[in-house]
Amino acid sequence: MPPPVLRLFAAAPPRALGGRARAHRGDGGFARLRLRVRAAAGEAAPAPSRTQMIMDKISAGEGVGGAGGAYSYSALKRLDQIWSSICEAQADSKVPEVVTRVEGLLADSDLGSGSEIFDVIVCGGTLGIFVATALSSKGLRIGIIERNIIKGREQEWNISRKELMEIVEIGILSEAELEQIISSDFNPNRCGFEDKGEIWVENILNLGVSPAKLVENMKERFISSGGAIFEEKSLSSIYVYDDLAVLKLSDGDSLSCRLVVDAMGNFSPIVRQIRSGRKPDGMCLVVGACAHGFEKNTTSDIIFSSSSVKRAGNSGVQLFWEAFPAGSGPNDRTTYMFTYVDPTFGGPKLEELLEVFWDLMPAYQDVLLQNLDIRRVIFGIFPTYRDSPLPAAFDRILQVGDASGIQSPVSFGGFGSLTRHLGRLSSGICEAVEGDFLDAHSLQLLNPYMPNLSASWLFQRAMSVRPHVNVSPTFINELLFANFQSMQKLGDSVLRPFLQDVIQFGPLVKTLGLVMITRPQILPSIFKQVGLGVILEWSGHFMMLGYYTFLSTYIDPILRSWVESLPPRDKYQWKRYLEAWRYGAGLDYRQGE
Image 1 (cartoon, rainbow, N blue to C red):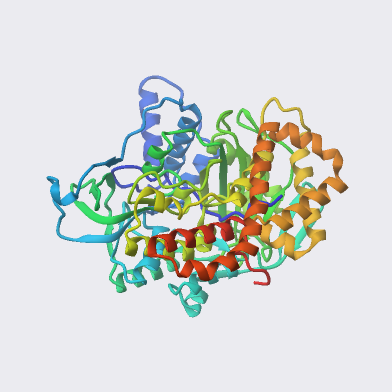
Image 2 (image 1 turned 180 degrees about the vertical axis):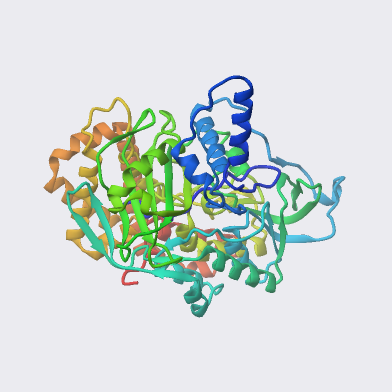
């Protein structure tokens, strides 16, 4: 079973329709106002939580777009309200319609065609800037809509050099520029589970990258290639005609394009419309902090569990840790605590998780909380759906990145998955635009069924605490350690793809086989934990993973030359099939990098 190869995005308030979002300096003003109101009413004001007191001392600065754009206490409370609303959502909840399909040509409508028509407009600039820059470099006319200012957050992204090189290979970042954005480099990297043993690896999530430098680099390159940026503008609605899409903005402006790329993340309003507001199948809750004062700060933890199931709020949760040296100083370290929950049963609020974090983190990191200078408090919620990636539901609209669900369900945030798929997506989008293959069916081929991604959803389920399931509180740690120990015995060809979020048929068969041989007593608890229905569904994806592996290994080489001889539309479709086999089997991952 693969661990969560966690992409380390702290949370921002979700991208929603209308208005700008800014992080404020704590919530001190609001807190003082509440105190005065309660005092006037003769009520005793509740004492602020430890989390609020810590966050009120931190200068949060301005918010930025994308995950990780806000650190204030008010932003934390807003996100907790959203998390509560997800848990309480009813199946028949009314969802605002952002996209409207209009029959006929735009030129024949009252709107007309406008002054300029873009090939592609990307909605959401923080990660969308990478897709936009890749497309602009191919000669397309690209625009970006971003409701804030396009800039990277302060908190680093942790990634492996192999994944960064994928940006270099598609030509939008040079190796010299790559070295300039790396702010920290550390080894070795640890995986461990409740004193059962530790596994140490090299060069996995061992680089800290400055999002501020990287995004600024992309922004400059995008503008120099002729791209247009519309900052501090929010999307209100999209009208899809037979020939074009028209985007209405909150300030009354409108833009026309041939294709809309939705890069607005997990909480994209377009995705919400497509999914009809359906409750996610799983959720990863993340809290943490970046602080100064760590003397032992040369290694990282990829995944570490220091305890069995614990209580947070009114819920039982299995807590995991990640920790990385930060590039801001030799004694600066970022620590994350995360857990997987089922929204059907609810879960702790982020503030409740942070209270647990302050209790447990000092023992985990062997420090005293009072000796740390806390620079930032980090928090996020990351939904996952079993039916991912999300296929295109409309003509002329395509989801990418977290909006598409292309990231692993055991990841939080998708920078690593974006780099993995960026070359495939940018080439495919370019072909679709140039060939005018922009109907929903053609766009669905760019977000195809991938059995390795679907199979990995089981792993999140296995790592989630489910109420009324009679398994030992130590079961999750026992299961994870059994899998990691087996992968270590099988060698790097099995362990390393798993650690980088790539599920492959051969390594999975070897790992499951060794676990069943060496730990047969754990099998009954697995069935109790995840349920027979989920295992049967997973078995189908497992068989398809083997089938895709066969197709990509043996059929692809036979068909490739034939595909090149096909007419444009057929060629476009078959190239997408070959890509789906390769990426869906995890065979895009190259060993030895």
